[in-house]
Length: 431
Image (cartoon, rainbow, N blue to C red; front, top):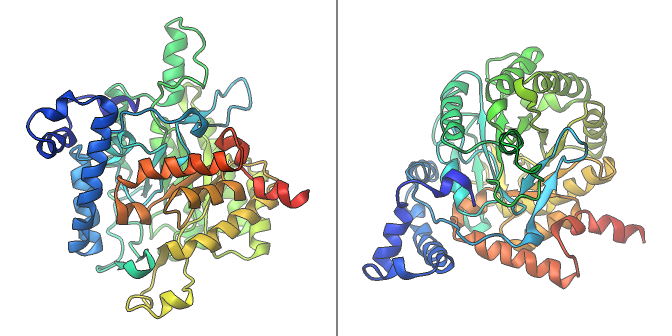
């Protein structure tokens, strides 16, 4: 179960369920049917969010989720969907994901909504990007829907309440009995329990923390912002992300260049390695889809040299495919996300997998809207996938169907697990 995301007072979803199914009948349903009813209701409600502008809808969504208004997934994920990463040596038992479908950063920027999101069936949730000091981001309007393309253009510009409020919320969540997987294992060991292996299904889905830099921090000192994030928030994270790829912070993408990246990631890793109590959350790098093949080789070599634990491929794109360019909002500045990004970001993922020889776990992000898309990313080299725009359009009702489709894809190709399918396209090409 998703730990604390499931406990506490009866969820708002339960009330909705009761209302929808005629007084009291809801409580007689078995858990699986309760979940089914809740997801059905949320699927029916999600179009209401389109009645208001994109940013207002996003904020209302966050406020509702912060109050626990979300479907509660009580059905366990199929074992075949489970992914365990970074359990390569004795010191680190790794991180276990109940399923490979995660929510990308940028949705829950200030760590207000993640408990409800973890409870709604995601395999993991990433909060942020969080910057050290609070900053307002760019002037509004700064988010534009392109519904005909299942796409969004945003130029939020790292609007963030800053490290401190995020740290307080994350700490409160952890102290309320929702330890990181690392902590949960340590507690179990100290209590004299059998060595809690990473196959222990009772772990909550992992929570990632995505770090950004303040707009006014000069590039030469950018590493200080990320290091500060590691020091302050690292203890609460199952994994950390260094985001050097938002197109909306001037100069940020320059940090992807070889000389910057190696120093940056080395500094971040040193900060991570000096966290107290032996905590070593994996550090991932999030890159842009708009890199040349040469850039990709540079990033891959810097990532290997700096011993980066994973790479998220990719952020939003500044490119505008023809159809998008013709749209009324197509000319808006900012990062394009959603369906039009699927092909380019998956191609990019393929390149990164080849350039790293499959040695670094990759997270496929960009344009994923169903189980088939997720499967395409996995075959191209992703151990995990993330979505955002499709979730903004479809709401949490999409998750059960997506996981079912992913299982059907695995079955059809004869894979016994997600893990077996990772990078399958590359192996077939070599045959």
